[in-house]
Every structure is written in C-alpha cells, then in structure tokens.
Length: 144
Image 1 (cartoon, rainbow, N blue to C red):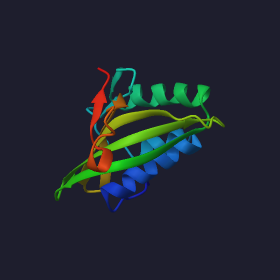
Image 2 (image 1 turned 90 degrees about the horizontal axis):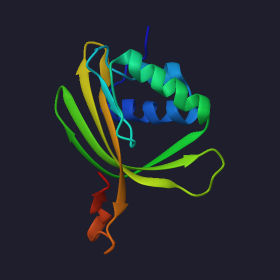
Image 3 (image 1 turned 120 degrees about the vertical axis):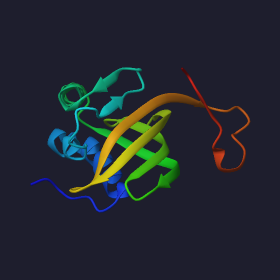
C-alpha cells in the first residue's frame, strides 16, 4: 500500500526528496491515481498521464542521478480538497555549485480517500527582475 500523505506540504516534500534521491518509485507514489495528471518541465514539454510522466522521469534520472531543488518564496492556497503552491525552484545538478534557475513552479494537490496527492507540477524558467523584485523578491519574469 502506498504512503498516505496528511497534507499537501507532505506531498510536496516527498516529491522533491524523491527527485533528490532519483527514486522513481517514490516520485510516482506522490501522484494522484488519475490519468489526467500533468507534469510540465521548463523545456515546455507537457506530459499527461502516469505512464508518460514515469517514462520521462526515468530518462531524467538516468542522465542526472543527483538533482537537488531548493524552494523559496512559497505562496500557498489551501481548501478542504484542493491546494495550490506557487514556488520558486533553484536546481542544482550533481556536484555543480552553480544553480540552474530560478524556475517558477506551480504544484496542485488534491485530497482524496487515500490522503493528499499531486495532480499537476508545472515548472517554467524565469529571470529575476532587474530592480531586485521589490519587497520579498516576488517579481519574476517568465521566459515564455
């Protein structure tokens, strides 16, 4: 039986931890059991359904066994059955000290009979505004 996540935050943590370990089974365990799940990478590629998402992440892990994502500037909306998190991701690949990013990501979670699960992960490349973004640094421009 798969893990039951008590909150959207637990799912989000498990998603990024699985990514850092290149653990495909743990990464897929956070997704909702629904063929309409969606994952969009910064390259703009949209993956729909568990099979497509699994195969794509299998390829990512084969080429990049160590990915670390640091989250910042989280904005969260939460209801009884749905939660949306808008975060800024900074990606580190392998032993590289130079970060990739920032990337803007939106994670959408749904609560069901078996706890919270990820419905959609959408990450887009972004550039920080030249003025420093004002208070909180929340002004980022998307590249597409």
